[in-house]
Length: 113
View 1 (tube, rainbow, N blue to C red):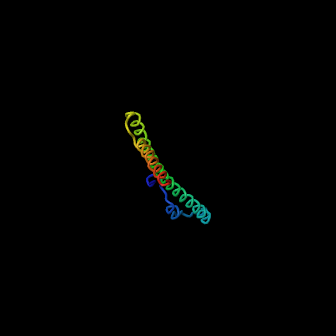
View 2 (cartoon, one colour):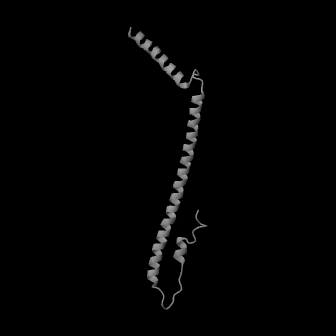
View 3 (cartoon, rainbow, N blue to C red):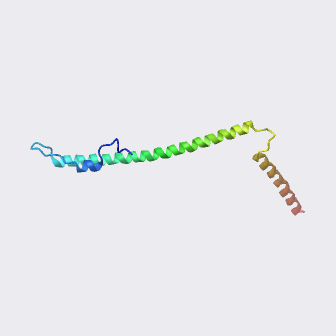
């Protein structure tokens, strides 16, 4: 992921040892500060991983939406260029619905008599 761009890992920071001079820093303060740096560094890495995962999900969603958009545009073009006298599925469903009303309507009238 970011191995080529990030030089240090939290483990590198944890294991870093400094040479001690007579006028050196207090080891306890350096360790406490490095602990904070390690924690922040780990949070940084976790955020990058989360962002990468979210980016992949969004890219997948974009691809799906683009495909859906293409399909809809094709459907519109087909509908525009189609023969107005051509029978569509909607026409068939309307006719079937009307026939069902007629058939069931007659059955209801027959059962009442």
